[in-house]
Amino acid sequence: MTDKVITRFAPSPTGFLHIGNARTALFNWALAKSLGGEMLLRIEDTDRERSTDAAINAILEGMEWLGLDYAGEPVYQSKNIDRHTEIANQLLAEGKAYRCYATPEELTAMREKAKAEGRPMVYDRRWRDRPEGDAPAGAPFVVRVKAPTSGEIVVKDQVQGDVTFKAENLDDFVILRSDGTPTYLLAVVVDDHDMGVTHILRGDDHLVNSARQITIYNAMGWNVPVMAHTPLIHGPDGAKLSKRHGALGVGEYRKMGYLPDTIRNYFARLGWAHGDNEIFSSEQLIEWFSFNGLNKGASRIDFAKLENLNAHYIKNSDDEALYELMVSLAEELDDQKNLSGLKAHKNQVLAALPALKTRAKTVLDLISGADFIFSARPLQFEDKAAAAVEGDALDVLQKVEPVLAGLNDWSHDGIDGALRAFAEEHELKFGKVAQPLRAAVTAKNASPGCFDVLLILGQEESLSRLKETTAV
Image 1 (cartoon, rainbow, N blue to C red):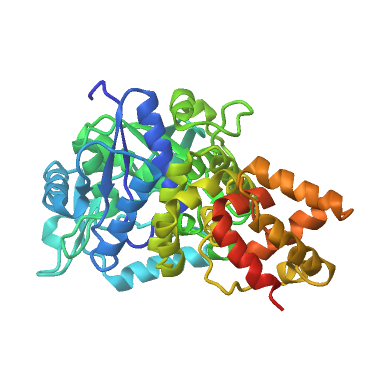
Image 2: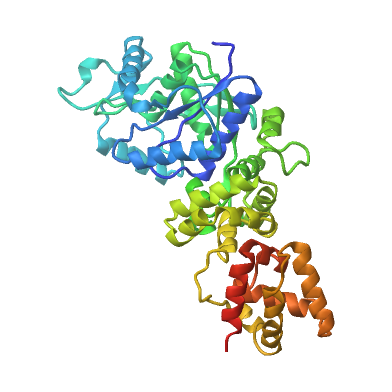
């Protein structure tokens, strides 16, 4: 076995990149980095009917978006079928596997008997020691491994501790189907061995698979990798995460306006901890990550916490980087109105971002918050904004318009001085001037402050909007 730590992420391309799988990738990435090793990517595409190019692209794009780099090119399991078959034949030749001619009817009878007796179905090994001469001529067969019939198989798990399985409960499982194709249990072991994988970190739903796969490792005389199995992510109600809990794919979170930094931080924290640290960088994750920090119990996703963490990362992000994210998200969502506005008013959007990002929880919030900059006139007022420019407020706006039109110093201090002097002259609280003025030029219920929007829009655009609003 190589001294270098090699982990792997091995998704099946039968759908989107599930957040549970993404967390597995994240853990393997962090483990490899923390130990000075590398992570490999293997696409387990042997299920040709369900595997799709779209799903493969979703996996690759999701990995790139999350910033989870891997060594070399992706390995496609379907290209290794000859190697898998070679190992199955080797096990046959060495008497460590056998051809099983049990018919579908016989297997069904075994299954029904087990069900009636209230136990799991275990193949009864009826072909394990029978001579080949007993085989029906030309009958189809599968190849089964000769698993131990007594004793125990122990998975030395780095999270759960030693997990013991009685050999009698683990039957002689199939490694080659009747059509000659290898099963998952065989293919994974062969690929992990050939790729030099030293550490396998995956969900605890694979614990039984690990016990079975150890049988193959032992039969081949190969070193068993270090194994760790983490509990699955649950929904807020404690049930296994499903569609009813909300978004399941990494791509959905991207479209909802979450940052990759947020997803890395939050999903690392779901099932792993370093003291009481809730917010940490990827560099800190790599520095701190170890098996010791992995939880034995399932973690519950909390969407409110996720949103608040995203707000933290947005608030502390570079404005140029946020602007690029806004543009790319508008492109991905085919939001042509906002896309054209963002591109045409880049400087104004950048000027608005320091104020916008203090109240935004997602990139979508940033886009909707910035759209007052490029709103077409006449403005379409939101309900509360419309109410804010009626009655006495409209009178105030009509009186303040010539003050702003005659202002030569269109700066924060210049606008501030002019509006405060106006408020004092008319015996008004400052908010009675600033609030309707902000609503008049943005038509929105929520936006940056009055001074910010006037400076961002500029004097000409601000006055044009104000005149339209006050025209009666």
